[in-house]
Length: 85
Image (cartoon, rainbow, N blue to C red; front, side, top):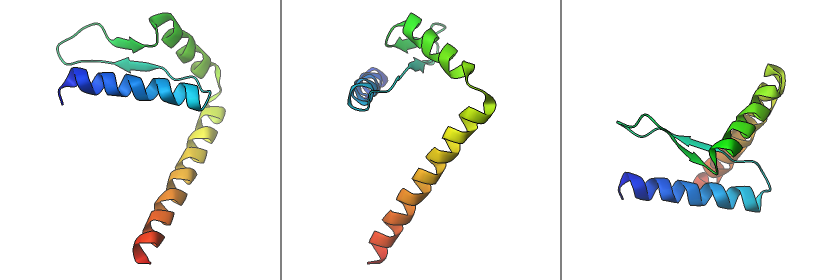
């Protein structure tokens, strides 16, 4: 699978995630040797998503990150328990 196929797959997954979970998803992809990034969905939408993200306080951002870390830790523990059984 070459880079363009991987990018297409990533964009497809991002679109599915945004639709299925009703969340804002924005991609900025910097390719080797290119000076202009690939953005998804549109550059203006990516800028709006970044502006929205940056409007949250550092505390709000870190709180969500901690929740995500706890979620991943729980999932990892579940997988380890399944392997033991």
